[in-house]
Image 1 (cartoon, one colour):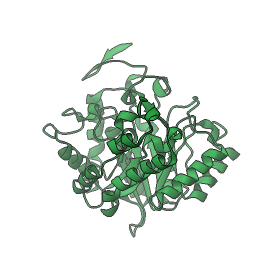
Image 2 (cartoon, rainbow, N blue to C red):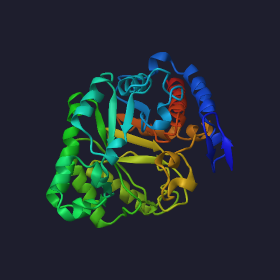
Image 3 (cartoon, rainbow, N blue to C red):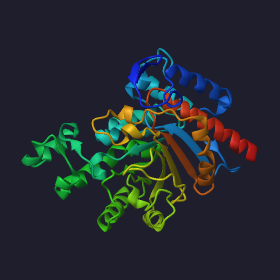
Image 4 (tube, rainbow, N blue to C red):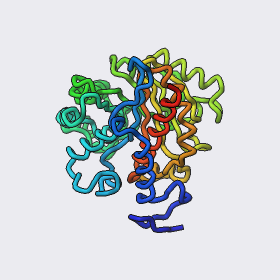
Length: 361
């Protein structure tokens, strides 16, 4: 039923613990910050004495309208795009760029990202929808690509990659990778996230697609998130299908993305902890809001509106520790980017990881 939080009136299917409102989330974030050494903010957590292994915790957005209102996450007065990114980078050492899923990135913008962040800051960039078999709005494509579309496609509202001539599909990839070159030159490109839809099934054709994508990345780290239970074969993720999937990613040199999300749905995947490349392990925590996960016409921010409890975060600490023993960099993204829910949980998780590794040492 509808209820009022500190900033808005909402109709929520979640209990108070998982949708506590921005004020309570801020209070939790403040408590987490009390236990994080100030020098750790904005820095990777080093988990090996020689600095050879690290953990980076961040969020999957820094510009969502629900987060940019003054006092939610950003201090009042931090209102420009430059100031927001600089403040975010003072708190977290990495971020996931999700806007590139909807619109191809621009080289000039990537240049600004590189200039506005510390030397050791790292961006992970989500692949454009056309690169992972999903539709895109024609109007959001760059003008040179729109002009090159066959007339039958240019008149459509949305198109899929399967509709494109090969040379235009090649052009999408080329445009995307060229735009990221300023990040690569600055040493700030952590990798490209290939997030596939629930209709992307474990077929020979799709394995070939993954192999082709790995080849197109040509040395840029790629991380794969799968959103269909058939890649795993069972709810616990312990079947032969899971081993086949992980072995395939190892063979292709692609990092497997460990996921926390709603269970019991067609797009649900089990929280399998596994590392498939020695350079990169990745975890994405989406929240567990089942009612909106597969619902049609739900705003993206509502789909991920979920505040993890401390106990739910604690369950991921040993999995992240295990991953960090196998990969040079373990990156964790909180994708529950509704207001300050993601940033709060990122701070809480960092505090727990810092305590865990301090205790272990």
